[in-house]
Image (cartoon, rainbow, N blue to C red; front, side):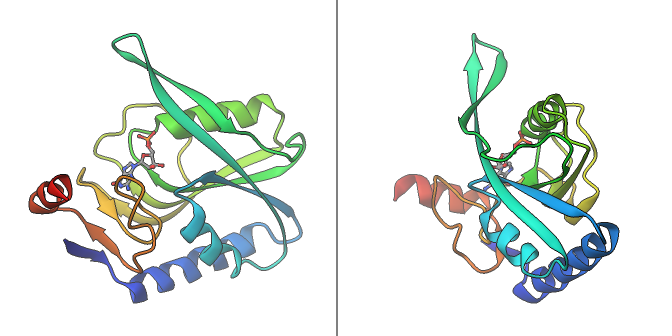
Length: 179
Ligand code: 5GP
């Protein structure tokens, strides 16, 4: 595994994002919506540095194949909070194809959010295929496709606890498959 973002780089970047968000939302009441489970580590580090009023809620969305080609999404866990009239900040770990985000934004628009912006820890653009709202707050932009783990990113449900972000290489996939 190769370190992609060190802890210092991560902390520095999250502080910058928090400052930007605090400035942009001054005097507003943010509804921060995290997409579980990937959002957890990034969201907690970001939120404690945002100044002002923030309410939080979570959604869990899962994708499933519909027939042989098309992909659909369903809610495993929906929000408790009323979205209508709120300034919503979606917090996501990574946007890859953009399909999850396109579904999420459409859903929150339909519920009458006053404004919707996206904060994503990583914006991975190489495989983007869905048309979705552009994230306003991006931790790191990554224009390659390889899989990353650590600092909230999992591989088969594990490794979210690693303190830095790693890029998985060919031999790591083979080792994980054998384990
Ligand atoms: P999208 O719908 O944009 O293709 O997928 C977003 C979801 O795919 C993310 O929330 C994340 O769970 C997963 N994902 C995409 N790329 C990676 C990656 O490099 N590492 C990990 N751990 N998850 C990824």
